[in-house]
Image (cartoon, rainbow, N blue to C red):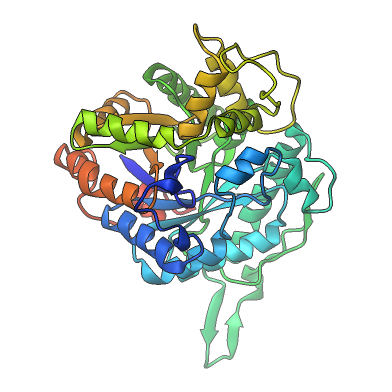
Length: 429
């Protein structure tokens, strides 16, 4: 199976930063991230996956007060990590709404060169008005419009990376020729939202195209992924739903004219690991006890884009108005709210623990059993591991769960290739 390490600042649990061994002073320190990347590489992970956003979530005081809203800039950080790692892939989250494709083609191309072919980008369309207002707009683009722009964005990236033929650069000192102009082409792209002349001002990247990851779970996001993604970071809650999503994803890939299996599906998984089941459950309770009730409700309010603080916490989720924010995660909450016994409290606790992803509590063997069941039953191609706190949570997974997977023949003992495409079994375009 394939494994990614999702680097969400000090940890993926909302209260992970409060655990005693989490070095809060490390959030903006290079050595903190170097430790995480080296740990993932020691565990033979395919990639580290750096989360990002382009604004501060200040809609709800409790979210700003009690959660870490700081987001280190990923491309700068991953470029530094490229120097101190050798094999692990390096994925940066990039907004297609608030960036220009020429800039991103250059930056990802350079990261691919610096890392000798280990660069990836996680394409997101962004989801908040705060981000829009940081880029001269009053409101975020409509959901359909931002996916239209994203399709143009990725088309341009690929055209720019291909604007230099692999053989264009010669540096022939005898003839004095640096490059063959016939092998360098402008792209002259004109779309509804974007227009780029090209060509890129650097050679074609080592991987041809850096690996493209897509994390949208809405209908638009899934269709977009079927056409462009090498990896999908999915949100699944049960084996049956994951199997249905996996089968549908392969059908969409085929309908998009691609070969089934070229797009890897990797759901998020937050592991709470203990030496015994009791110890794991005690750790899970300790983490949840550190979450203020006001934060849980505010966090859920932010996901559903409606203030729930004025409703009874042990009552049902009310009817929600239409929204232009993140659709996929909101729909997950709406689906959960229909289950018997679901309340604002239960939904809030669930969301603040794992942001809608799977949470598995148990021993390393229990967690490996869970992962093996999904992987061997056509529910996924691997997992994106969301350690609840950093750096200890990731180190626990590498030291305890990875050997279980290796012993069963479900995960590599050593890297066999050098590029991220090698790790994922993806051909170079």
